[in-house]
Image (cartoon, helix red, strand yellow):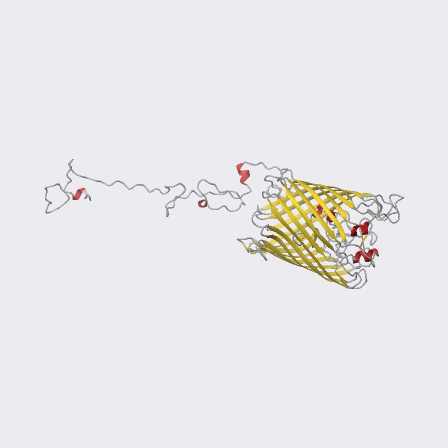
Length: 618
């Protein structure tokens, strides 16, 4: 029923007036029916917690004024809920809340000395920096090595340690103690969490003290009158560069281009097969397409190295040896989850007229092989590298071809073309806390040292992380090639290739070598977050022994090197890289080829290496 307003209602039986001058006074009666509407209910804009009615905008909070000079501009207050307070940057948050009191000796929590907070310019007014986005990063590393080992040690020609010793090889045991302290500092500008620094200055020094004891003379020193032990030390400059970030393709994705000049680390491929060293150079590098494409364009002028520590000797003139490289990485190519890399490198060596004697008195350039004449060479490397996975199988693969010219082969004194090849791959499968690995490597050897083609593959400066790495006996130990070249080694320390060089630090690349074949299997077991057990077994062969036979004046030398068996226990008590202790043992069960080269009285056919290593990092 519709109810009329009271001013238009009439009592029953009454007739409406014919003339209405003004509305009559309402008649109040207890019998009157009257319905007055109330005020509409208030609108509830937040009837459900956390939700608002569409189109409703509440009052904004008062604007907050920031008084932190030099900080990044804070978002406007309306961008935050009313129960939160914006802060100018992330670095001052913990300090503002009073949760952590900074201690420079603490490497785990927030620390200005490891780049967690910007530099306070008021405390270092002498530092020529402007702005509040400069950071200092310092690091100190202690690397301690205790290494007893055995390997074929040649008896001195002029004299021996024991007067009744007439064999070609003497006692096998030796001991190495090495202590290295590394101190580095970096000064960089920029928001370090999300984008590369705008500019970076970095310096790293390394001090090495080493002690070696061997049973024979003329192993540590060329003079037979000197003792069979040696204590040595050296300070090397391992990093000293400026890195300038001068371009961005896309400010949303932070793709960039940088140029770095000075002594700097560089690794040419995923596992360090071709070049892995700290050298003087200029490098242009960057990325794009949201970091799916990366590239390097670099040129290095190789520095001389200290003989016994392997550190950079900047007080000596750099070598007449240049290494130029261009490479490009592409993620998800050729298949998803696989990163592919194409490499083109050029090694230009002009040390043919150079004579170099190392710190122990042994000639290293030219090597004491063949005609004993110096060599110049030009070598071009073309390579493909891959790293990633196919389904659940992890894969790392490398393939290189070396092409060029050796201006003076030490076998013929004639120019020779260089055509050599290298390939390596590692497959691994993860199951819970276990990883199982299969490894294979091939480096071509020279089949005819007296022709005008050198087919033995050699790298520029290898330092491979492969097939057990420096836990492996063959990669860790240097085997001297006595009888065919004094102070020449079959392989080199922390190297895989059988390159017949005096050393990879001071010697020249040599493409007259026997090459290498390797098949291996291994497994890693993460028993706890702090403890890992790693095992490895490799079977090694020379690819071709024609070069060895020519140098030893032997008609036939078998190819088999032997079995390399190793195991390592790695303990990180804090589950971080700040304290790492490793104890490893390796054994070489020599094969027929190794025994033919290094047989001696009392040889048991087994050589061992034990490595105790403690690394402390701040």
